[in-house]
Image 1 (cartoon, rainbow, N blue to C red):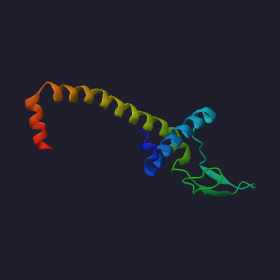
Image 2: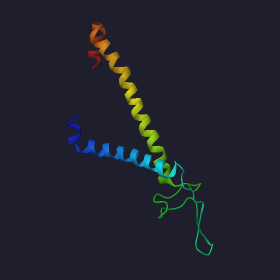
Image 3: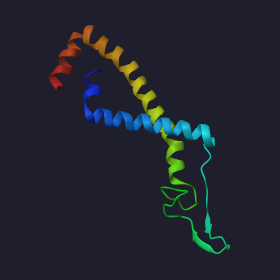
Image 4: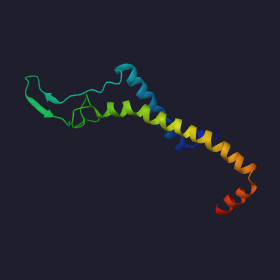
Length: 119
C-alpha cells in the first residue's frame, strides 16, 4: 500500500475522490443539500436579462440546468452518494469473492486445474 501512495496517478485519483467526498459533506453541512435555483436573471431595474439554463457566472460557477438548478450544487449533492455506494459495493464484492477464492483454491483441486487452464 505504501508503494501506491508514491504513484502520482494513484495520488491524483485518490485526492480527487477524497476532495469530492469532503466537498460534498461540507456542502451538506452548510446548505443541507439544498440546490440553489435561479430561473430568471434580472438587473437592478427589474429587466429580464436571461432565463434558465444559465451560463456560468459568479453565483453559479458551472451554470444551471433547464430548471435553473445549480450544476455545481447537483454534482456536490450526488458525489457523496455515488462515491460512497461505489466503495461499499467494492467492499462487499471483496467480502464475497475472497472466501470463495480461498475455498476454490484449497479444497477443489480439480476445479483449480480447470480454472488455471483458462487463464
